[in-house]
Image (cartoon, rainbow, N blue to C red; front, side, top):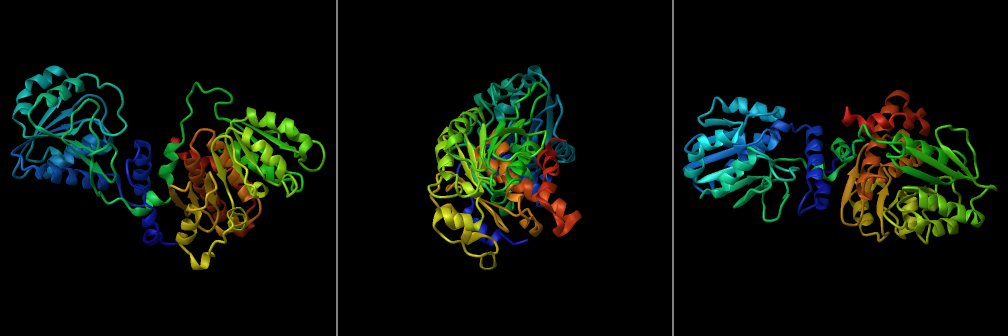
Length: 473
């Protein structure tokens, strides 16, 4: 597996990071061997350093039940020498395992612990708020929304009314003032002071299992069609391609998949929309436009051949979202009415971008290809397939290293396009492309372990759910 650390750093993103993206990066870091407790230790130590920079004599650390509270508890442990430190922590409900771990360690430290479950408990220790030079806000952290309930609301009001400087751990709790925000890894709010907590570069530059946390979880009240409706337009010269794409879409979570094709294959899970003749042509235009307007996402190009491009160009603006693959990747380049994903291999990229990519041998980590792909003005998200897949929307670049050489067999790209289409029903194009590349690559690795170079594209299909939805178990 190529080492991307040297070449990927230039593609690191900066600026505000969302809670959802940070959660994915954290999970990717843990998959790369950095434990959650290691990350918490680094965050808490950096938070303590931020406190000590203000030279306080007395510090009050306010901790919730989540990992943000655990960060605060680690900070308190590093403040136990030379600083009068008190920890006021919410003692009702369930703590995260990491927070519980830090609280257990804190009980052997030179700090005073003050659990609270009610506003009366807080009023009984109001003097702590009055005498503190610095208050650490580690109550709620990222992802918290809405108006805090009691007793947290009273806790925040007492902190806001104090004379102390307030340092927020990562992000201020809703309603809490902050004189300084100590942000871990990347800022989540304007005005943050960022500290490095040792997250590997590849956790952010490469796809990983953390990206799967972005997939919406289906609720018990979900109904038929909630997973999205995908239309696959293809076939004619090549029979199996649109059906592989359709099965990929079903296994990636789409509820309804229609295949609009001149070719019929008896796959009962797919709805066949029969097109007359042996090629998709202008006579099918009106029907295809109606089907495209109905679908959440259109996947187009699989097995299509070279004679149907005018139809593709006419249908494309009627697609809410689309994935264009294989024979749809021709100039003029089709573009959906909404978000668009293009999934070329190197040869198809050269055809649509007018630029030949360097070979894998001279660009093992994909840096040169990534730089070239990022400047291609295609007007959509690009999933450039290769030994290392490159996903870019011209603003962001992500590398995917999953996969196996046995996946060079025909049809695997069709499965990928279908899976990308299903994910695009619920996710932005860039995220859908990243997750599809990662999951299909993982599925390919699993098949290759069993069958080696005897892999069939259809072997991937049944492996998709386990790789894509395992984080829900």
